[in-house]
Length: 127
Image (cartoon, rainbow, N blue to C red; front, top):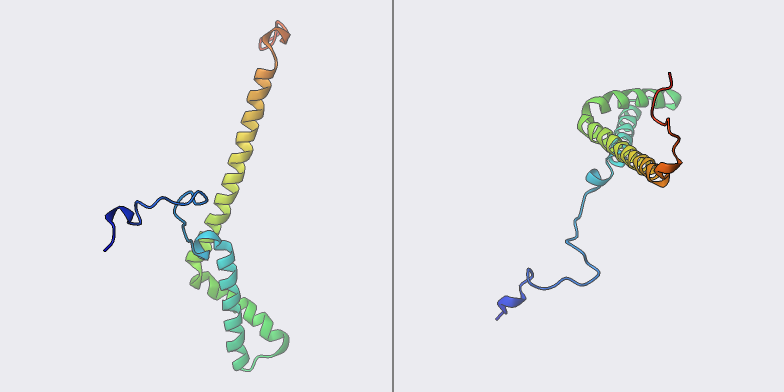
């Protein structure tokens, strides 16, 4: 028999756990790494196919590079968009932090200077 008061919902969590542990995939947490890995996979696949068709030496690398780039435009479109979203969200967060820091510095400067230290013509146009 199980005690209804000891169900997993009512058992308190240890102090070290602040909430449920969320597992995210590499696609969700690092879309740029996923896209880069898939680009490498496409390149190697095209390289192997061209090698089997008899291409060797420098021409093998040149054609594998060109054909894999062309193929990845179509095959990895969604992944590329999520990678771009990862870049843009990262830069957006960085810009937001810079703006918040600038606003905090500007606000601190306004409150650091007492009004009596301002010259009488501050903020007025001189004619």
